[in-house]
Image (cartoon, rainbow over all chains, first blue to last red; front, side):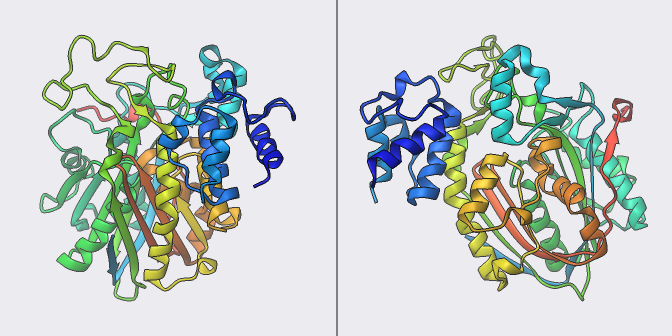
Length: 74
Length: 363
């Protein structure tokens, strides 16, 4: 999976400026990472990557890199 | 998975009723701020809701819908053999069953069977399954399914996950024996492991979490929302994950069992959970959005009434004039789900009735 493309899709999901996050960005530091974003992420993983991420896996994720691991699991 | 094929039964008519009071979601701007409301509204697709006021119950909305439907169908009340009332918001906290009071109020015969079914989002499909099965299996001729909720009353105004989501509505579906009707197919399922994710934990003294002096106190919860143990709680992330896991296979199953191709279906009438969820389901199941009617914008998520309300508001002209192949798909609280593939129409479908508070039962 293309790292840049994944980061861009998360930026789009969170409605934040391109280039404002990287793999090391901690989710806690993003004000936009809220319950609506959780659901949007599950939808993105399902429709774009064909992966059913569980809420437990999502809660355990701390960084953008963790999210990328989740959708790359298949 | 419980799959059932039921023959010789048709839906003769569907009616719905909502409280007259229509409230824009922006009315909550003081609590959440205009930006947050806009964000939530974009996600849910909800702009208005019809909200009840104290004393106007689910049964009153269903009563008005049923009365209207019986009149339009020219059904004598005495010809109704059974009444099924589907709700999670009954007239009385425990007893008696609201279905019994509705038998009396509608002037149905005392030889009419009447009972309540305590299901929400999946409830209308369960009610239809029971009604059609009673007719096919027990020889009844006419059954009324009344499904309705005043779900707006269950949430804390300070809980942004649910307080702008639910609208109030009641419905009536008339089901009768018809030897010429095409068979309808049902698929039902349950996963009780999701019980915690849509719940009102407390509120009664002798229930699982007994009511005490603290259970009605609203506090800031882990998710930063203000609610008490007697308010509705929803874990939206868990419910979304459940839905995208269970609904696509459910739809496939009921299609396979009915022998229909997805392209042959005129409309998929989903429980109106929220727009984001339904749009996602349509996209992943490759269903054009034109086949997924939504009543969310005007009415919100109306719990057990959402499927009949969507039919009577979004498909009324079509279903009044011709026969449609419908998939009705309910899913949610429980977790409980059910889908029905049914060919129905032309049928009697009066416009949605607005109900004033003065029409509440004066018992």
